[in-house]
Image 1 (cartoon, one colour):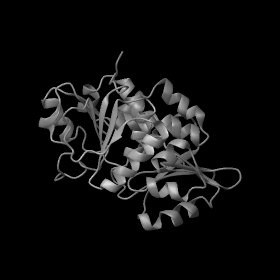
Image 2: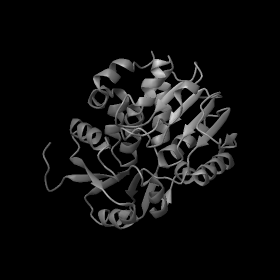
Image 3: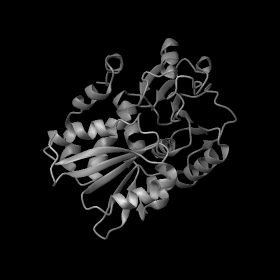
Image 4: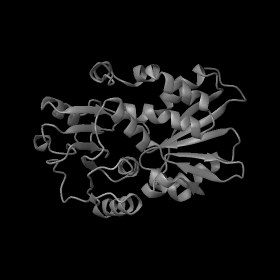
Length: 293
């Protein structure tokens, strides 16, 4: 990779930043498509997010910004325009500047997650779904799942106010049955999703008690670090079908590239994303996760 005075710059912003894998993906794909651009990671405190984003977009070489924990809700508040999915979830994970100088935000986590379920033939339409977490990524996933018509969409978060707000927003926009359960008990659910940070630290508790999982339940964990996570290992030991979070990032990346004005990179990944799967997936997980025929 050669960086010149003409190279455009993408940024990934998070706090902490160490678990973020998006720069690896962008910096692998951009040279393959002959695009003179790079992605740089930035650790930014929530209190500084607005100032940093606005300062970065004052430079014409800024190509776009991708956001991760905990900045997705904050980013929704600072953009001038955002998509229906982003407005419903009150979260943004991609920002661009339009020709009028306005900041536009969108949210692609949910699209990537749903496509990852389809890749592994994990059914979600008409199912009872338990989502752990109500932050930016969880909100995106809830929005995407709601548009597919689940039987019940339950959202558990220790911050019950945040979970209630998300449930009401989803129900109002999509008309699906939502609930905020009193606990993280996964019994009775067909699909259980960890979209919380639990599992990033070695001493974190499990997002749900695995002994309460139904034998037929499918279990997903969207974390980009420590895969397979303790939750997935516990579920696999019980014989449940599982899915790690890497594919959510891979399958939303084409939407990032389209949004930022580089459809050739998006189309390359749609045709064949094996180079990125090999980059992100540990050998154990790569062997474990075989896409459905």
